[in-house]
Each structure stands twice: as C-alpha cells, then as structure tokens.
Image: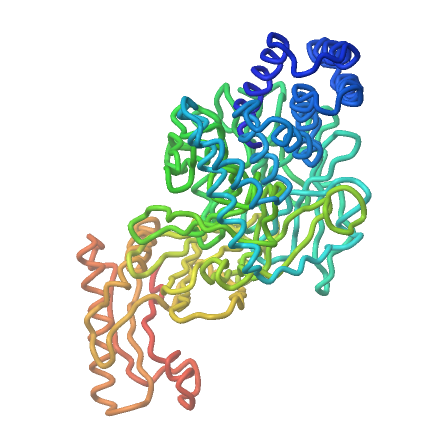
Amino acid sequence: MRNVILLALLLFLTVFAYAQQQYSTTNTEAIKNFALANQSIDEHLYAEAIQQLQKAINADPNFVEAHAQLGDMMHLQKNNKGAVEEFKKVIAINPEFSRAVYLKAGDMEISEALYQDAIKHLQKYLTYVGITDQNRFYAQKLIKDCIFATEALQHPIAFKPINMGPNINTANDEYSPVSTADDKTIIYTRQIALNEDFYQSTKVNNEWQKAVYLSDKINTPNYNEGSESVSQDGKFLFFTGCNRPDGRGRCDIYVAQKKGDDWGRPFDLSPPVNTGGWESQPSISADGRTLYFVSNRKGGYGGYDIWKSTLGPKGWGEPENLGPNINTSFNEQSPFIHPDDSTLYFCSNGWPGMGNQDLFVSRLSKDGKWQIPKNLGYPINTNGDESGLSLTANGSYAFFSSNKLDGYGGFDIYTFELPLELRPRMVTYVKGFVSDAKTRQPLESAVEILALDDNRAVYQDYSSADRGDFLATIAAGKNYGLNISKPGYLFYSENFSLVGHTSGNPFNITVLLEPIEVGNKVILKNIFFDTNKYDLERESRAELQKLIEFLALNPTVHIEISGHTDNVGNDELNQKLSENRAKSVYNYLLSGKVDPARLVYKGYGKTQPIAPNITDEDRAKNRRTEFKITAK
C-alpha cells in the first residue's frame, strides 16, 4: 500500500504533460497509437492502452513519452517488473526527460528488490531543485528502505516455514490464524467464492483435526467476517464485519461469546470504539481489558494507525493512539498483542523495511511507552507484502499466511519457530476446573489472579457455567495469587511463583469449593511471613481483603483463625510462633472493621500436619494459616 495518492498524482501529471507537449517523435503511426492510448486511459481501458502504447513503441523505439506512459500502465496493472524496464528505457533515451521518472523507478525497483539501482535513481531525484517537501520526504524514506534491505539481505535470520497441512489448508484461501493459550484451538478465515467465513480446528494428540465451520451465529452468507482475535481461554471472539446492517461505519469491530459448544450472536462494539469511519483488525489483551485495533479516524499520524481502548466500569474507553513510536505518516496495521501484554507485533510500510509492508515488533518499556519497533528481518520480511502474524502463548512459534510457498492453493497458513531475539517475554497459563466439593457439579465462579508485588489484578473472569473451566495467561518474573469465590461457598486460594521461570509449562488445577458449613476449612495460601517471624508481609494484603469481603458477604459466619508449623525446631517456640501468626491475621481483620465477636485465633504448632514432615516441600505445606467455620 505504498503512497497510492502520490503515485496517482504522478500518473495524472504524466498523462497531462504527455498530452500537451511537443512529442519526441515525428512518426505519425507512433503518435496515433499514443493518442489512442490516452483515450483508452480516460475510459479506464488499461489493457487496451498497454497494447496501443506497445504499438507506438514498435513504430518508434525511442518514443520516450510512450515508454513513460507504458511504465505507469504496467505499475497500475501491478506489473512492477515491466514498469521498471520501461522507466529505465526512459532514462536511457533521455536522462533529463522527467525528474518524476527517477522517483517512480526507485519505488518500483524496491518492489523488485533492486535496491542498489533504486538508491542510484532516488539520489538522482533528490538533486533536482523545486521538488515538493512531500516527495523529498518520500524519496528519503525509500532510500532508508534500500539501506536497511541491503544490510538485512547480508544477515538473514533462521526461517523454516511449515505448511499446517490439509486439515487446515485447502485450494481456497486461508489466512488470519489465531490460537488459544493452550495451543489446542486455532481459528482462521477461509475465503470461498469471495465470501469470508471463520473456521476452527482443534489439536488432538498433537495433531490438528479437520477444520469445521465455526458457527452460523457468526458467519453470514452475505457479509464477510475476518481479521479476528480470540481471547486466551477461547470464550470471546473479536472480529471485523464490514457493511453489515447493524454497523456504524464501513467496517466495525464485533464481539461474540462462547455459549456451550456454540457461539452467541455477535454485537457491534458501541462508540467510542466504532465510529462512522473504519475500525478493523482487533487484538485483545490477555486480561481481556485492552483492545488494540486499526482505524483511520481523526487524530492519527497517517492513513491507518493502531489505537487501543481500555475496558472500564462503564464500558470501552476513549481510544488512545499508540503514538509516534508505533504509528507513522504511512500505514500501520494487523496488530497482535502477545499474552505478555508488553510485546506488540504489527505490519507497516512506514518504518525502514524490505519494501511495501514489513512485520515489526515493539516492546513496552518500564515507563509504559512503546519502544521504536524492530524489523523482523529477512527472509521473514521480503520485498513483497507481509500482512501480519500471530504467536502461540509460549512465544516460540508464529502463524502466518502466504501464497508464495508451495501449498494447497492460494493463501495457506504456515507456522515457524521464532528466533529467540524476536520472542516476547515468557508466559505460562493457569487452566482450572471448578466444581462443588460434594456433588462434583461444575460451578460458575469468580476467578481472580493478582500480581502480589502490587496487588494488581492481571485476570478477572468467571469459570464457565457448563464446564466450570477457566484459562488465564500470566507473565514470568512475578509472584501471583489466585482466588476463586462463589456465594454460598468458601473461597479458594493458591499462589504461583514465576520469578526465574524459564519454561512454558502450564499450571493445571482442579478446585473443589466447599459449601459454607461448620467445620469446613480454607488454607490461606497467600498469607506470607518471614522465617521465624509473625509480621505480615505486604503481599498478604490481597488475601486478607478477600477474607474481609467473605465475612461481609456472610454476616452470620464465625471463624477460627489458626496458625501451624512444621516439626523443625523447638516445640514451644513453634507453638508460640503459630499463635502469633494467627493473631496477626486476627488483628488485621479487626482493622478491617470485622466484629471481634465473630473471630477467635489459635496456634497449633506442629500438632496438625497435613503432610509428612519428611521433605522440604511437605514441611512447607505444614507451615500454613487457615480459617475454619465455627458457626453460620
């Protein structure tokens, strides 16, 4: 999508000039066919114009105006190789015929990976006086592309694309693949007879199964569905719908929610996300609260820019442009935010690249600003158009589509291992199932994951009502607390340390929620103390607040808070330590306005182990804080 407006203007000026000036030939046959070609161009009969221009050149091979016009027509018909040949003939016949031909030649030569020739012609163009600031900027930008591409060709990166096979790809076009965090489901677009619909494949025994039509609740026979993003748990699908009767603009962003084995009907996101303009290509963050998308709305830096909107208590907030470290005066499209929520992949024809659209990655710095993007390099990027890619949650593999490789026909979906320097931060996922401890029936429960260093929620959602399942991605480098709650039940807590985590191995848990009954207990796994101390650490606050909320929601419940130790050390000291730790929790609850008549605390020392005191891991289990229902 290289500066179409500029080239269209140049083409118009060329046609106008050729029609008005004294020609470089006196050959009547050449002039007659050139005039016929101009008439055909006016009537948009470009194939006929090309034939007439070729006849003019056959009559006089040095007819420079005909070569220039034919070069324009070749480019218009996407024959860039032919356009380059004609522009070079113009320069060879008359180097001073038109300064514009040097800019056109350089532009087309980049499309054909003729970078050194392009540099020579672009530098020649810049020697002319009186060129516009816009054209000077564009020529300088193209030279930067040539310099980058020349260097990239000399330092190729590892790239071994693998076709995803006949269960995914067909003789039709397949593209825009996205996968869930557990890499068990892939959703993509298939185009059949100009109609775009979504298809889905699931992985069984490490093999992708035959893709199936996603849903007639989402796919339509009369409108195209594409450019999708699936939430990490596979329960929400954001996608682009164009010219639909319920739309607000030419293209809008829609969202649909999974309902059992099918999907609910999608709805159009309300303003300020969708407008009367063009909104497309959504990408949803791992926590489901930040939506990245592409728009040509006012306030941007160029044609298409990447924006984001954050979900708040009143819905999606006013979109924010990602700024000049991402967006340029050209086009940025196809954003993909990785589940680490700090690595963004996108395509652009504004940043230095191999030509046309290239793929880039930008990382979010600690101050919350996007860094200058890095080109993914050659041969991931080429002199053609690279339109976008997505990654697996572990960041090791990428998906993309191409019609340039040996496939099954048209665009096929491929995967490749991403070089280490281009990968996002390490993430893993928590996959759980919540059910009633007595009946084993699945429960729809509130699930919250907190970063314990600042008690910030990184995931808030509900387990599904039909299966009781949930899935959340979390980034390495922090400690996390997990809380699961449902009215009428005791809450559940767990913690995960991903400090120094170097693998993508998931956490799989089965949670049995106990009903609120006298005698039932909860281990408070996110209550922390220093060794042999009883002062509560700051990371304990989120768990304690959860306990305060539980008591507020259940005002008749009374509890005993108990402290426990392992069998290491002096029994008397262990008894005292366990009692003081329980008292610390008791005092915190009192500071939270909990009625003291509802609370008691007690230390049990080593007397109530829940695991043998043999290994370090089992002894850690015995060092715990609990609460028990004493009345309801």
